[in-house]
Amino acid sequence: MKIFKLFGIGFGIFLLGIFLFALLFENVPPTHIGVKQSQWGGGVVEEDFETGFHLGITGMHKWYLLDRRTHFLTFSESHSPAGNDQQRGPLTFRSKDGNMASIDATMTYRIIPGEAHLIVSNGNRSVYRDRIVTAVESVLRENLAQLSPEEFYSTETRLARSQETLPRLASALAPLHVVPETLLLRAVRFPPGYETRLQDKQLTHQKKLLATAQQKVEEELQRTGTLEKEIEADEKELRGTWDKQLQQKSSDNLVAVAQINGDASLYDKQTRAEALADYETKISEGNLAIDKAEALRNELRNKALDTQGGAIFLAQQAAENLNIESVTLNSNDPNVPSILNLSQLVELLVGSGE
Image (cartoon, rainbow, N blue to C red; front, side, top):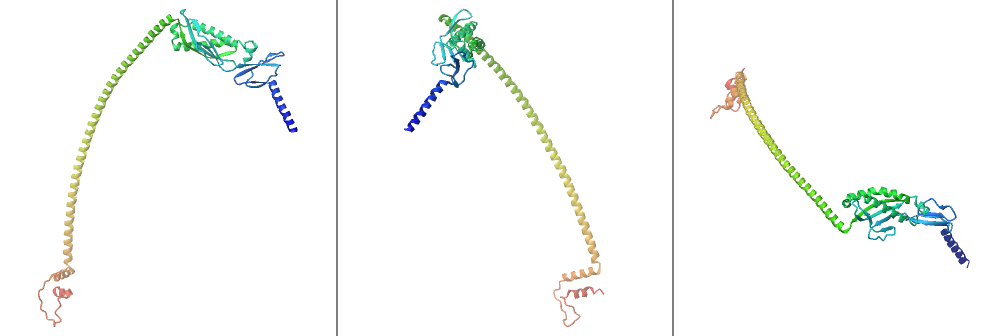
């Protein structure tokens, strides 16, 4: 039982804590800005409260939440389901030439950071968005009235007018503590009869632009054709110059080759003639040297043979070349030399030399 009792007490304290937290604190979601007002004097607190929990005692303080996201103000016949969008019908105005017209436009804006509490303190929390519509309509009508119908179908003109209008919108909306971000001007409509004439006029203008573009194309084609012909002529001229230079270089090379071949042939003939002359001279000198050597050899040989040794040598040669078919010697006579003993035979023939 004590456990259940303690559990019940703890659960009761938990619920009491949640209740007290809800009484003492206020939660500001990420998509909104919190504005706190004191119920017992002091008025609106001059502070924008960001996302999170903030002290706000129930019964003492009152909280207002303003959307911090981008707001869309659209003037168009179509309707948008987004919660932070403001939808109005097409914006009607009188153009520069006095014709009535209507236009579709969209402007985006945000609350200026740090000024959300001023919207509440000025009493505009529930009406500031309607006052924004009134201010935007006034500025757009004033600016669009300066354009002629012909200028409306020019995208560049509409974009330029949108950019020029943003600073004036910012000045007009600053007292409402919001700042415009973008402005888009879309479809423009005129009364049916005038719309038809304007479309015809626009078609004529488009045809004029097309004709101008075609003329530019033809001019470019003509210029391109002229450039092509000039390039072709320059190419032919360059080709002729290059061919002439190539032929000149080819002729110069042929002359140089012929000159080199002639010089080489002349050098070959001169070298060969000189070599042949040197050859003949060397042969003659060699033969002369051989003849001199042969004469010297014969002279030296004769001198050598003219000596006693030479005589012996000649006798020995003669003995060696002696061809005796038959010899009859008395073998019993010791004074008779043997024919097999050449030395004795030479001594017998030429003497002992003593």
